[in-house]
Image (tube, rainbow, N blue to C red; front, side, top):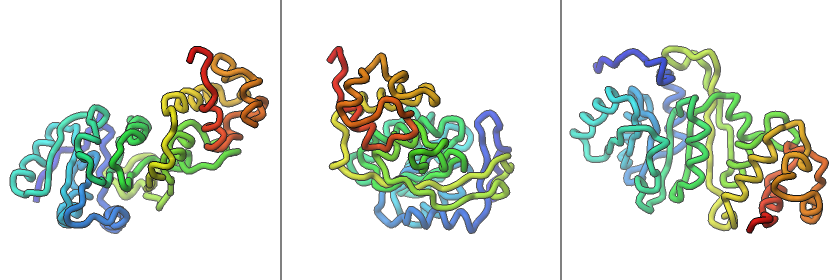
Length: 260
């Protein structure tokens, strides 16, 4: 049996040990022989061993140098494992997938999970994504408009993906047990017909709209677009960002900036 190091608090490490949940997560992504799969943070291999057993071509991204060394030693013994050492935020997922439809899986580090999810918006080859996050964050991502949990991340991800909360993972499923519960989120790309004309403009509008949640669009967007322009696309400038659906934000993003 492999002797692993203790979890590193500085890296936010909590290792999944509940076998039923582990099997359920892997089954959610249904890895098959020949599939290209990227696992973010293999850790001690709770998911990794099952993924390798499926015969998929597995790429793992590990920041912890000791764990990366372990997985490299495993990669030297099998032909379907490739190890990428370093910060996942600095890894180009498109380079790993090489134009092949790719599945993404992982227990995302809580402190950088939002950034990882935003980076997925530009990962062109993602076919399916199943990740573990804080329960509170998953609820925010799948939230509908007119809900206090609905926000910038909800809009950014829902524009690009179908977002589904699969199931809850209790804190006792981890070692050491975190103080909060987690949940499994599935992200399924909506496809090429859903591409934005100007993704940067869309991101700018969404960010500004939610900058101060209690303020209206009139106030939050006044430096970007006028009240008249908001009204021209059929939106009431007196409402708050949380009252708009994704299509409303797309209409706002279609308004040309004054310096364009």
